[in-house]
Amino acid sequence: MACGSEINEKIDNHPCYSEKAHHFFARMHLPVAPACNIQCNYCNRKYDCANESRPGVVSERLKPEEALQKVYYAAENLKQLSVIGIAGPGDALANPKRTFKTMSLIHEKFPDLKLCLSTNGLALPDHVDEIVRLGIDHVTVTVNTFNAATAQKIYKWVIIDKKKKDSLEDMEYFLQRQQEGIRKLATKGVLVKVNSLLIPGLNDQELPTISKKLKLMGAFMHNIMPLISKPEHGTEFGLQNWPEPHPKELEIVRESCGDLKQMAHCRQCRADAVGLLGQDKFGEYEKNKLQVNQLPNDNGLEKRQQWKEEVNEMRKKMPTQKVKLPHQQNIKLTGKDDYLIAVCTKGQGVVNEHFGHAKEFYIYRIKDGVPGLINVRKVPDHYCDGDETCGDKKAALENILNTIGDCNAVVTAMVGYTPHRELEKRGVLPVTDVAYMKIEEAVKIAAEKLASGIKPKSAFDEDEAVNSDS
Image 1 (cartoon, helix red, strand yellow):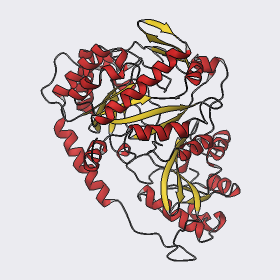
Image 2: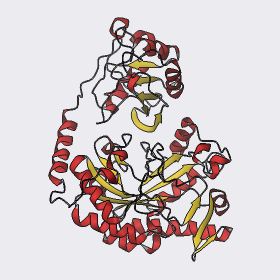
Image 3: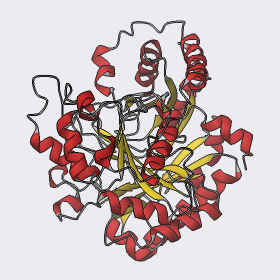
Image 4: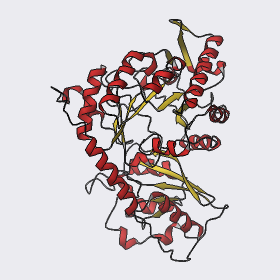
């Protein structure tokens, strides 16, 4: 088992395992594993679907040598790169030769990059020693249930002894293999993140118990993700019109699973994702765009080291001064205070996004005086594209208001007159005097304003906002 200092070192620049790290560091998924040994009813591994952003989707598949060339190209252009992962488009361990050859090449040429893989766990117990040998110290296992009867409804079949099987006994065998693999990895000091799909009406009541059992097995983190079941994706659940969970439902389930560290900043990435979470640039790294006549000697290490130093300096220089409250000073939050705060940010862990430009909102809950990220709610479209379109997108604004309308406040670098007025009508307090401040501190300030009795209207400076509608 890894100790505290070892764990901190492992997650310090891993964007999936650390909420703070994801503001600064990027991951790269290499789509070298096309085959899968199970069929999930929520998965349809379409090929060449560049407009979709969901697990299992890729625009192209790579051989290990092509994957290495792609990493070289990314290393020259992406100083934030810190993690190389294999997440499909099938299952990493259903393609062990391709997966481990790729990882071996990366480990040799890029020893500073963290190695990561994702698996359904069916073949995991057979490969734990090789995972450890190659220095793959982050593994994600997808576990949706511990109940074989529920598993029969989630999975169409699993491959056992080279045959597709779907009996209750086969599902029980599959679930046991997942648990065996997780325990083995934890014993070897590998950090295990478990992904679970929240499937309303199927496994939602099981997830709190699953989370407790995972903690006892040694799992490091639990990532509960919403089911994606749009009919156009062609999945079994989609064709059945199975409902997707509401963001609020997801947040409630995550809170009920709080015994194990929760991942709330997941974006359900593609299997060929590249870049910061929420800023996927996979299209810039297609094979036909790579100039790889020969591999360069420079693997980009100097750029990555310099970026780490810059990040450390940025974190030190982030504003920390407190904002003075107009009516009451030194408000202390108590256990009675419980607020939801939406945050506009485009990265680096600070409030640095205008309300009208936000395509997603970080949702923080502040309870007992402590803020915690519970979700990232996406919106179909942001409100403002510039001076020519601001104010014209009534439907976009309505979607945003519906997305964050249950929040008590929204923290943003700026908000225009129209959205400010509409937020007030919904009882949401816009807080704009915390620009470029650390998110957690800005959230506390917003909560203190709410606790002091400030109402949305009293915080509005009409002269300040009238010239901007973003």
